[in-house]
Image 1: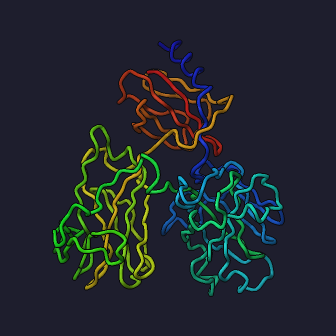
Image 2 (image 1 turned 30 degrees about the vertical axis):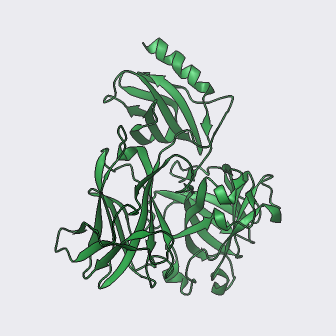
Image 3 (image 1 turned 90 degrees about the vertical axis):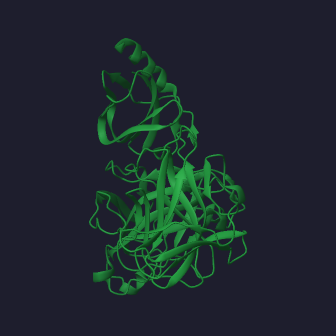
Length: 428
């Protein structure tokens, strides 16, 4: 059996290598990142593992002159922005310090220019600029000693690109401020919630009647003091939406979801829904699948979106969600005596073949020895799928993974090594 397995792993050397869709720096490598002039980029231990980023490692960028950061193994694929497969680029960013003698005001309100550069040189061309993110920090750095090392979310929407067609190229990010040191982490592109066959629509409330009630709950098991009623869309972008009215905090909408036959929640990697409120609501979100928290605002009272505008929320499903066909989704915001609307609840099916390109050589040797799959290098992430694409088991920062709970058969091993993702086929 070992000899056959080894032969199959050799066949796997010619399999596809996935293009990067997320960089986390958890493998402690640069992942192809470099500052192209007048600065440095270094992977460091995350100095602020509270709030929205609990990662162990991140990228530390010292900007000595408006220096762009090139992520040489993070490729932006070409396509029309109106039908693009990805809806946005997201990453986490934190101001760290003033680099040198520049005044503190130099770090206020910096924009971030986003490029997809075919050449990837230090002289990025204006024709390669997708657009800008208005402010890196969201709010200005007014007191460096207290505003430092606070992680913020930055987003760039592809549909807002200045270019009609997004060009294929290397992702380049340019912070438009001089003499600034900052941290960056978890760079990823988010699949569009309206593109392709991998989108599962769970609730759009169009088949419900106006006034129909849905279940609500107290997230901590206390008194229920809320109602969720189907109402007319307040912005008239669709017919119906679900209006959540709360007279106490800790109230959530409770939605029972049954997935298609043969699918489990672990087969999906993102949750989407649209949210609307008549006024800006500064409040904390709480999103859960059964007892697993998908997302929770850690502290403070962030804005949940512009007033009188539908905002699409998207969340990554963690590996700790229950591997079940049916589950309860809880969506809630900590408001008192106020209301908001929810619509178009969707899930994105994990696709291990999206964005792949052929490579002649897969440098990894992957084989199965008894109840253990081994690879020839340490991977920041190892995922094992069945041939139907269902995720079965995962491990981090290792070269071995226990598969004692899997039966005999053919499996796909997806390993992330030095910022690249390789797929191999093994037999147990």
